[in-house]
Structure formats: structure tokens, C-alpha cells
Length: 309
Picture: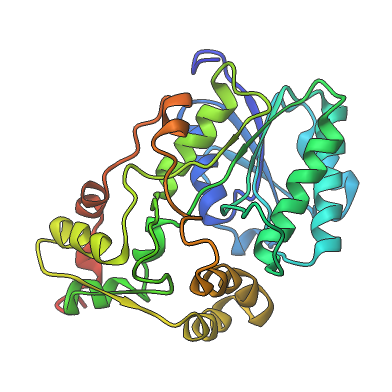
């Protein structure tokens, strides 16, 4: 597959940050992209070149309409952590992909998933969706590829982190300081999903994708300091404090789902869960993720400066 052979891609989750990065990259490369949104048109983010239809994954007819005519699909579940609802969404997506004759479906789990079963909804609902896809597509012509990213660099370019980083040199995040993490940007995630859609020989595989480096909190702060040109120190933010702040934006249910990842990491049961895979996924997908300090240097941090209006 090349940019000269356009795909018709159904993107589930394109109105979110990660799915939106994938949808925009596909559109930039002249592929036809369509997505679904429950939000009114006035509340949707700008997605130039992307067709957005109103609808709900909970209704099969809406999912079927999204996949009509699609050759490929990029799927990321919304911030929903009720097992029954996630299962229904995944079943509708898988059935629609089969009936539309989709060639390959790439599922972005939005997180790494522990080998062991946990009581963390953020992990188990994503494991559940992956299981539904594998079982529902196993006897079909639809190829399945799974990508499992760690934590996003873009989380740190935000109103909650940006001002403290720029003005105080403080990088506060709810990961233990000693947790090795292969931080990845939304753009590099999109590149990984794009490669999973197009590269030959990866059908059926699962990739624990990550950024170019695996860094502890202090090492991350050093990389940010290099990119910002100032000294930066890492501060471990308590997951409960993070969850309380997030609840003001997402609501308590979604915030609890997201924060569950950080509560689990704080237990130390699987400290390497978010680490890199020695470049195996990058090699298989022909990816070259950006170094952290390079990514930092490219961001418009001045918008968070106290000198700005």
C-alpha cells in the first residue's frame, strides 16, 4: 500500500486526541477518511478533509453506515469503561468491518495491557475489546493488527503541565519516578497506526509500540530541560490528586477509568509495563519516533509563559 493507492478508512475515535492525530495524518496523505461522532456539529473539533457523520457505536446501523465502502479501519475506543458497553461497541465494529469487506483493522488499545488479569477497568475493557476483535474476525478476511502505546508526551503539553514546566521547571505527573516509560507523541502514534494499516507481513500481530527512549521520571525531566533550555525536575503527582483534577474535566467515571492506570502503576506490580521493547515494534513497522528533547523543542511552549497575555 502507498500514498498513491488511496485507502478509504473508517476511523473510530477521530474526534479525540489520539484518533484525531491518526485521522489527520491519513487525510494529509490523501486517503479518504470517515468517522462517527455523538457530539453536535458545533462541539466537534476541526477535522479538515474528514467526513464526520452523526451516530453512536451502540447502534449497529450507525456503525454499519460508518464502515460502508471502507477498505481499512483504525479503531480506538472512547473513554468508556463499562464492560458491557465496550463489548457491544466492539461487536458492532467487528460485524460492520466483516460485512463491509474491510481488508485490515488496526486496533489502538490506548494503553499497554498487563499479561495478568487485573481489577483495572482501563486495562480489562481494552483487553475485552481486543478479545472480541480477535474472535469475531478470526474466520473472516479482515486482518487484525493491535498496537498498544504507553504514555503520551502530549499529556505534558497542556494547561496542567505547560505553565509549571515553562515558568517553574516542574514536571509533575502521576507515574512513579522510577517507572521506565517509552513516552510517545500523538504524531508518532499516528505514524505507528498508519504503518500498521499499510505494512505487509504484520497481520495478526500485537505491537507494544513506544517512543525512541525509555526514561525514568528524572531522565524525562533531563530531556525536557534539554528541549526547553532550562533546568527541569520531576515530581511524582499522587494518582488520587490527578484523578480529582481530571474529574473536573471528564467527569468522575471517565476520570476514574483513566486514573486507574496510574493507581496500578503506583502499586509497583509491573514496573516495566510502560517500557520500550528494544525497538522491535519500530523495526517491524519501519518507524523512527522522535527523541524526547527533539519533540519538546518543536512545541510552542511560549504559549504557557507567564510573559504571555
